[in-house]
Image (cartoon, rainbow, N blue to C red; front, side, top):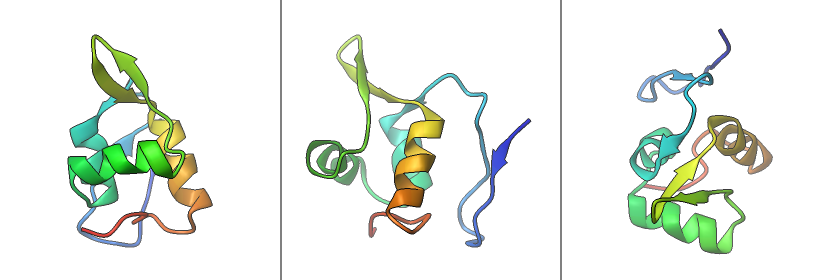
Length: 77
């Protein structure tokens, strides 16, 4: 089972086998608010898809996006 490790102790490990993350999961992973996550989707190219009018995220997309940004904490709190 693949896991994403971070150097920061305050982030948990996230299971890549989870089918999709909610906006709250992404906010927790990035260490920011849900409002910031929505802004990152609109302006920074964070990939999301609607599911019953709610945003959902593939863990691999979020991790890849954060790695491209050069930090596991892509957004400030």
